[in-house]
Image (cartoon, rainbow, N blue to C red):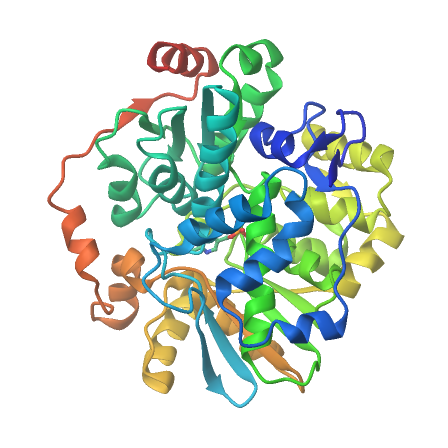
Amino acid sequence: MRYISTRGTAPELNFEEAMLSGLARDGGLYLPKCVPTFNKKTILELRGRSYEEIAYTVMEPFVRDAFSKEEFQEIINKSYSSFRHKARAPIKRLSEKQFLLELFHGPTLAFKDFAMQLIGQLFRVSLAKSDRRITIIGATSGDTGSAAIEAFKGLKEVDVFIFFPKGRVSEVQRRQMSTPSENNVHAISIDGDFDDCQKIVKDLFSDLAFRDKVNLSGVNSINWARIMAQIVYYFSSFLAIDSDFKDVSYTVPTGNFGDIFAGYMAKEMGLPISKLYIATNQNDILHNALINGHYIRTEVKPSISPSMDIQVSSNFERAVYYALNKDTIKVCKFFEDFNNNGNCEIQKSAYTNLLKYYSSGSVSETQTAKTIMKTRKKFKLDVCPHTAIGLKVAEDNIGKETMITLATAHPGKFSAAFKNATGEQPESLNYLLGLFDKNERITELKLDLEIIKKIILERI
Ligand SMILES: *Cc1c(COP(=O)(O)O)cnc(C)c1O
């Protein structure tokens, strides 16, 4: 499989190169040159198979010619062996038409583990072959950072630098990043918000000399390999509910648009997905874009669902690329305008295309808290604030088809917000307790690119 950039001028790459480089050199994002498709029969033949077997079938066309069959099977098996649930992504029925897909049974209790554990194994195998050392950087609103650190800690070919907004991640998220003692792990708190952290990553990648000097690599959801890993649970969840190949819809709590874009890919690959519902918190730039066709940046407002406190969703570029019928010149123009003015109108035909696939809802802080409470009472189920946002949007949109909502994190990861909403502690895990006994190691930095570069050069 070959990979091309949404902006059209970066070189075409194979899977391994696209994965190791992260962001394309022209500022765009990599996508497969053609999307593999499965017919109904092939999809239904996967029924009853293990998560790992489904993962192999769904992802194999994307990595073909990078890994042998045995290599890739072993990579997948290792990736999910640390998950606490045999099904990896179990699905719960809430009511006749409503399901919850639990994606928080991985080592750091959020869905990011599905992609990050796989990426860790893919990098390990690739780098061992090439004898290369790389520097991984990532911006995080909390969960990506902990998942990346968990996946790469101790790997000798890699240094991992994670930038997170100071004071804006939950205590568990912070401790997951700051307590690993391996010295290839660097947790860096930045005086700013998530968009600032994301901008640091983009700016470091745009400095091509620095990029080459330290062999920069990124594992944010801009990395195609992460999207690829997330496609799998759309297939596994569809297969787990008995639907006779009838249409289903998904509601996806959304920040950087990675998880929901994986749903778009699953649909393109042949899953009968009717609509993908974008569920946002009060940072609702995507919801507004879908309502009125204007993509307008505003300030990030901190919320009780911090992993979604994002205004500029990097993966939205991938959706826009397809909505603009792969016209890379128009994609460049759109994002240049947006970068310069923070405001652009989505071209009519592209807007119509987006509405064919996506719909949306935005949930206030009060409604989020109410939904946590209501879910506890009605379904005897504890959910994290992000999941609650998904459930609220799903409830507002439930119609005649089956609706699957993605449960993106374990409630214990956001216990303060949960306690505020319900007056009680969420269901806890022993694992969480261990985090509070360990020493933390954090480097605090100002939003200054030169200082950040200096620190990276000193540490690697
Ligand atoms: C990252 C994250 C999201 C948002 O996912 P995107 O792929 O960035 O849209 C939602 N919920 C939780 C718990 C997360 O960690």
